[in-house]
Image (cartoon, rainbow, N blue to C red):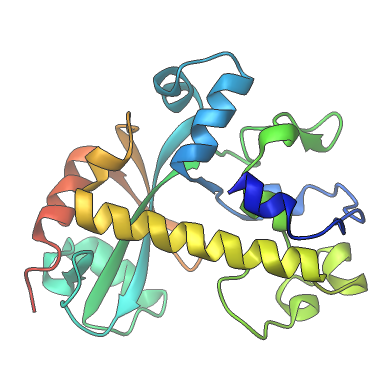
Length: 224
């Protein structure tokens, strides 16, 4: 992936004002190859890095049917959680369960440095962070409205370089979820956090354990 990126172009995002809002507002996920690189940066094993800095992050997305290995019927969701999802605007009968690993977060991402308003792992941060605010999974986004708190989004638009990286990020995410669906979560990651958060529309709505997540993934795809 890095080789592909090096051939895309020479333009780079340079106008970040280091306000820290993106590190505060969003939960950051990481792909397996990114985590391995980050662990080396901190001179840790992937297992040590995972234990110290990460949590499960389970995105729930409305889906049209159960005809997918990661799709779960709403009846399989605990009633209390299902009520929270409905209150938050979830309006489908099926749920796409997208299991990821994310960085721990209190007010800010665990790697945010409040003294410098910078990132303590800037050199190896996830591509989605490097792309922000141009990291949307959708096309034709009005970034100035979607991220009106970000000065970069209000003064410029994605360059050819950032657009090409955006496509690479989307491809990498699709490949990751395809591998999870085919091989199973535990075969994609060397080590997994034991607990984490359930997220809908970028907001935490519940907590979940690895055992509960594995139970969901066992049921997923059965309710067609």
